Amino acid sequence: MMPPSPRPQLRRYPPSLSVYGTSLRGALRSTHRWQGWRTRSWVPLGLSGLLLLGAMVLSPPLPAPGAPRPVPQAVHATPVIMVQADALPPVLHRIAQCESRGQHWTTQGQVVRGTRNRHDIGLFQINTRVWAQKAQELGYDLYTPEGNTHMARYLFEHYGSAPWQSSAACWNRLS
Image (tube, rainbow, N blue to C red; front, side, top):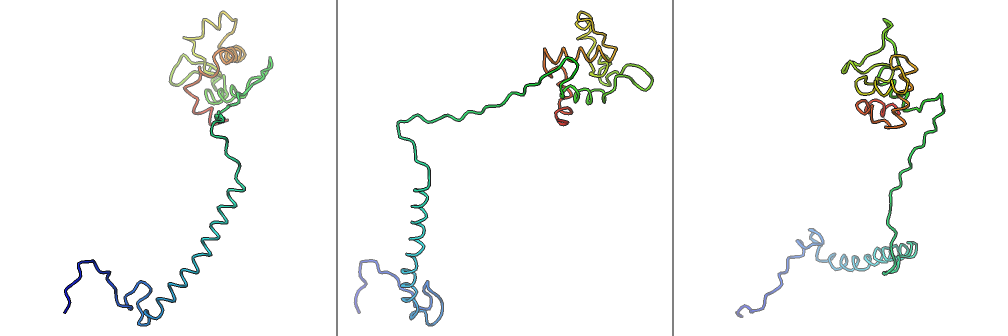
């Protein structure tokens, strides 16, 4: 008997346990499967190469290495609202709807007051502690629908929708 070789030996499995199948005829079919795999692999490889070549031809050219690249910038269009002397911007209509349900008077004939702050009055719920003096300087009576509307227009032209920010969730939803 010969002594074992110091070189590592490749381990060979019986043909029935080979990678190609577990049938008894595995030994006969293994070489055919190997050859079939080798020849069939060229077809997908060739097709994938053609697809890559087509993608390279159809893709836009890359910029030169030293060329400046354009920087994408987000440009937001600012809405421009044209306000006529007698027309209110749509956002003020939504604000009035959210603040007082579009009502200046209660069913009892009194001016609508705020539920959280009793100093908010009228159609646009303008706070009398904050804006009463300015309204008086401008000649607006906050207790009338016209005066309340004129003061709301003044506030919107000078401060935007910031005075009604507490109800923004409502009037943004209505837009």
